[in-house]
Length: 212
Ligand SMILES: N[C@@H](CCC(=O)N[C@@H](CS)C(=O)NCC(=O)O)C(=O)O
Image (cartoon, rainbow, N blue to C red):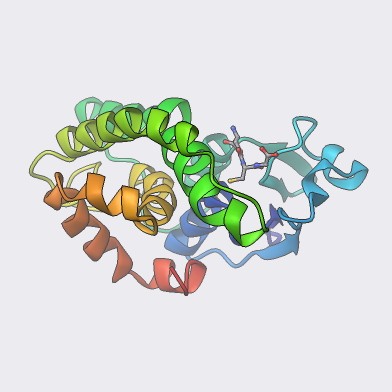
C-alpha cells in the first residue's frame, strides 16, 4: 500500500487531527508543506486540491480528497492498526456528535474568534479585536460545557480507548488553552483538563504536536 500524502501546515488544527489519526494507526505519511501564514492555501496549486482554499488535502493511491473528518474516517477504515471508532452505536454517536460540534461551533469560537485574534494577529503585527473575543467567550464556554458533558466519566470520548473524536478535539483545545481567556474558561471543566493531560502523554501527540 502506498504512503499517503497530507498537504497542509503542521500548525493547522485540522492538519494536526489528520496526522494524529495516521500516527495512531501507525501509518507513515509525507507532509507537503502549505504555508498558512503566507497564504499558500489560496494559491492555484492548493486550490486545485481543495477549491475552498482550506487545509488539509489528502492523497492516497491516486485519490485526492479533503475535509478533515472525512479523511480521518478514511484513514481509520483504509489502514490496519487500532480501530479509532468504537464498536457500539451509543459510543459511535457520541464520537460523531463531538466531531460535528467541533466543526460547527467549537473551531469558530476557540480558534477563529479567540486564538487567532489573541495570538496570531498580534504576532503578525496587528491588534486584537476585543469585541470579537468578548462575543466568542459565551460560545467557547458552551463548547467546553458540552465537551465536558459528552466526555462524561469516561477516559476518552469513545469509551476506554482513543477515538477520532479525541484526535479531532485536542488540537483545538490546545490552542484555546494557549490563551488567558481559554485558561479562565477551562478552569470550569477540570475533567477536560485531565483528559488533555492523558492525551498529551500519547506518542502520537508528542510526534505531531511536539511544541504544543
Ligand atoms: N471544513 C474543513 C475546515 C478546514 C480549515 O478550516 N482549515 C483551516 C486551518 S486549521 C484553514 O484552512 N484556514 C485557512 C482559511 O480559512 O483561509 C475541514 O474539515 O478540513
